[in-house]
Image (cartoon, rainbow, N blue to C red; front, side, top):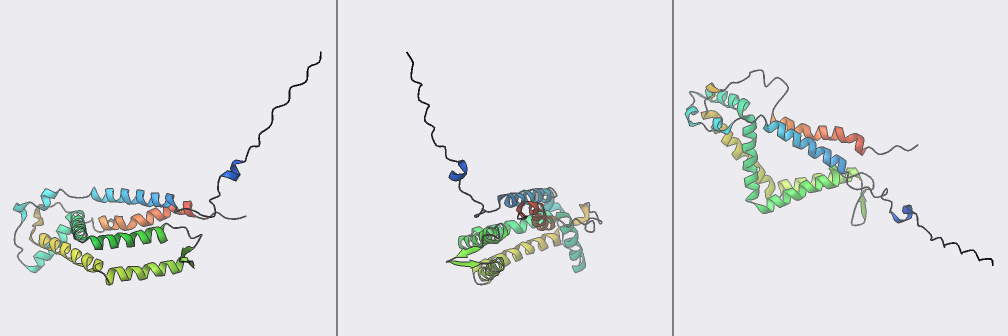
Length: 226
């Protein structure tokens, strides 16, 4: 007796993964590799600068304080103390500015919003697609102009600018007073240090953005079309 062949199993349609995964090529996100490169360079730069910080007990040793003999002596003391304690002095100014901003929450929030606007709307934002605000497209040059105008308004027409300037002046005053009355005879100063090409903590911070941009350039470069 012949048996009927069993029916073949039905083949279920399988959808392609390309149809289910949206294509994000037309909407590039914020360039995270560039942001990561900038943060890494900035972190390593800050650590390198802080490694040159002198011991704080040398800065506040009361046995080394004395009245300068003349104005020229005070100027010489300030120059030598700055050469030796420059990272400590920059830290003091930074602490004064931080305390001034923390005691003025509105100015702190305003400044953080301005920094965030520069970061996410210009520094690490891809140029394509263009920025769209209220239905209007803004080119990269127009975005830069808007951010510059916004910065001028925030710094000069609000309390942010006055707080930053006053805090910086207070910090510089503290540095000048310390440098005037701190006798530098016990400091081991290298006279060749200022001309060796390493200008200190501020130059390191200034070069972090340049180094990060150079390292991130191959990452953020747009692909060439054949």
